[in-house]
Amino acid sequence: MPEAAQDAPRQRGFAGAEVPGQVDHEARLQNRCDGLSERNCIGLGAEVQRAIIIGAMQGELDSGLVSGQVDWTALRSSLDNWAAELGFQQVAVADCDLSAAEPRLLEWLQRGWHGDMDYMARHGLRRVRPAELLPGTLRVIIARLNYRPPAARESWSVIRDPQQAFISRYATGRDYHKVLRARLQKLADRLTAAAGPHAYRVFTDSAPVMEVALAEKAGLGWRGKHTLLLNREAGSQFFLGEIYTALPLPADTPQADHCGRCAQCIDVCPTRAIVAPYQLDARRCISYLTIEHKGSIPEALRPLIGNRVYGCDDCQLVCPWNRFAQITGEADFAVREGLDDVTLVELFAWEEATFRTRLAGSAILRIGHERWLRNIAVGLGNAAEGGAGSAAVVAALRSRADHPSALVREHVYWALGRHGVTV
Image (cartoon, helix red, strand yellow):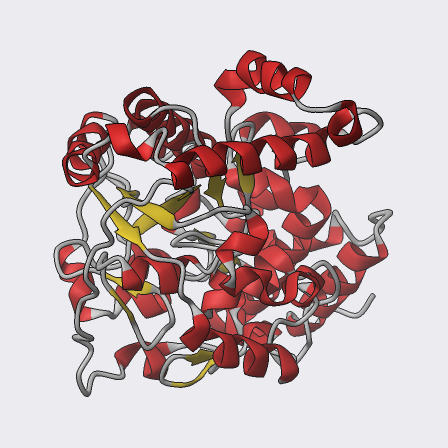
């Protein structure tokens, strides 16, 4: 996905959660509020009170009451150690100047390439202005956590088997938001213990964060032509999470671009969503269509989706840098429920209760059973091209022909038509 779109699937996929900062310091914050004048606090909402308190804390930093006691270079070094202890593969620090990214974001939105992800436009330039998201932000800490699952069936062998369902490998395990969010909060707690209470906020996809641009500034890698972040030691199969902080930590140095003349990610894209190097039209991206898009999948794109029922990894699979992608050591990211090697017919038979039970704790759960069936129906329709188990496939589709959802029925009828069956 493009930065704007990706900041919403895969380095991550498309999903999100956030943790407000200072959750472990409510008593201190309340004391601060009690100490402010009635004019400042009485009658104001909790968020407004918090903003006042954060401003007061930022004043402490500016006046040197906190910063005068901290060796920021030593703290930055400690950050690496703490991150490693928490299981992160890498952590880096960026400043907040994203002015160079503003024109690209505005152009992307003006072209309508965000599709029906209205929140992209609604957030406007807050995405490239961190201090508008958290007043007083001076630095952004970005952490990297590998997700490539061990012992998963080889991806191309699944994609090329029309009976199978391909699920993006980042989503075959536990929902990464929960794992990453908890780790980032622990890292923020260590910073607080070392530097004192300060304004901060933890993010794992939900808020308007320009994470690839920030990670690039911090030296975690460079933006690939597919718009994902690439790292020389880890490819692109990792998650990113951020901590916005008012601490003036030393910022790290960006890396150079190492894509060169390679265009394999552009050439392999099934729907030609990567319209040019570093430019992606989300409306054509399979990750967008199967995860973010809530309505009917455009008929012209359905045959191009193949058996990809949740996300798409093609641009990552062909990238030479992913020869260096590392197997995760996180048990939470190991394949669950056999999602790396399962048939379309089997998944299509799941009723909603089964869907919710089998995918509890999975990022897939967020799309809901209706869109799950929509996506699988497209895959079953495309199985006609391979002549794969047509009798079983047609029987499965017929079983949903009277589904109460008009969205599901539409895609089932289309799929049956691909098999020469008229409803």
